[in-house]
Length: 172
Image 1 (cartoon, one colour):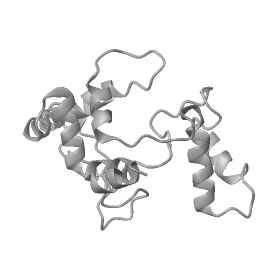
Image 2: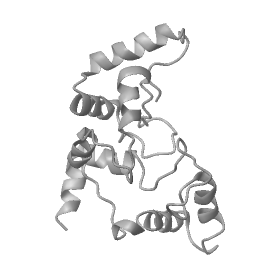
Image 3: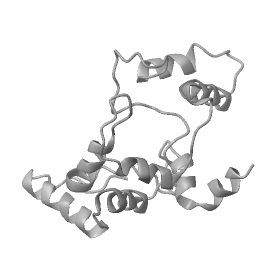
Image 4: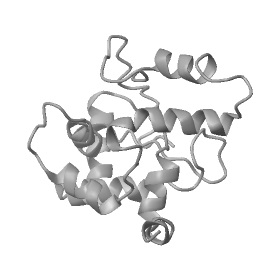
């Protein structure tokens, strides 16, 4: 398979795959009324993993089944391409049928800096050491022409404005 070497040799592709998760855990957009797939909110993901799978399946097999279920509209394939992700996020056209998280990305780059990294030495629930802060800075730079220094300054300005002096500027 030609794509496997590209996946493992491109650090950002590897981070996209292992660092951001093979399955979607919709914690931020947890819409209880979602109807686009059977596993589109936290309750449905939990039910799928705990009650809709045979008891003799391993945790890995259950996650694999969840990934297949979530990707069923895409022929059971998950596209892992950092450069294509940048192209898609750089498109400012709103897609009424798509996942429009570009506006959230704008807020993280210009105000909040809510970046969910997973350091190698941590015990976070994602692939440790793969999604690094430079990936988020790269998104801000390519998609909005904001360098890392500007992002940090934007976050500091928001922190000062809202008097969040005890909050972390970058969550990891």
